[in-house]
Length: 117
Image 1 (cartoon, helix red, strand yellow):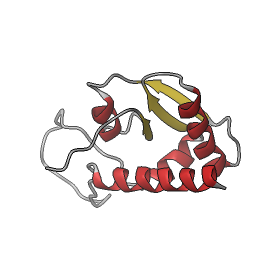
Image 2 (spheres, helix red, strand yellow):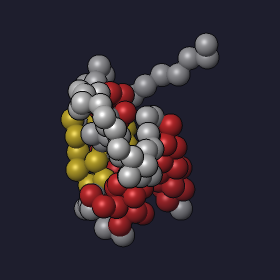
Image 3 (cartoon, helix red, strand yellow):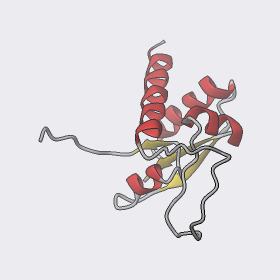
Image 4 (cartoon, helix red, strand yellow):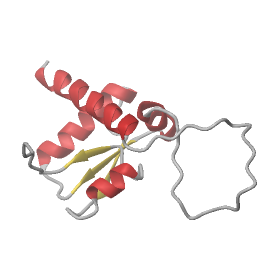
């Protein structure tokens, strides 16, 4: 039960982060006269919808530590009913938040600290 609730908590955090980190909504019928830019574009769908349309969870981590893989598998089991529907994306400490913001990964399983400032 504890693992199930931990997975639900992680899924909630992932969905919240996905909503907070750069989702931009525009009208699909909007016409602009501007030339294309190299600015990043964002999928306005909620993170859970994107995960479900991909068919697997992309878990970003720096190592293949057992507990991180188990957490990733648990999230896949909750979302898809199949603990094998996940992909591991290797990250470094310098690119982990960029990859999350760019939606190259769905969840981060990475060591981090939090300071009150």
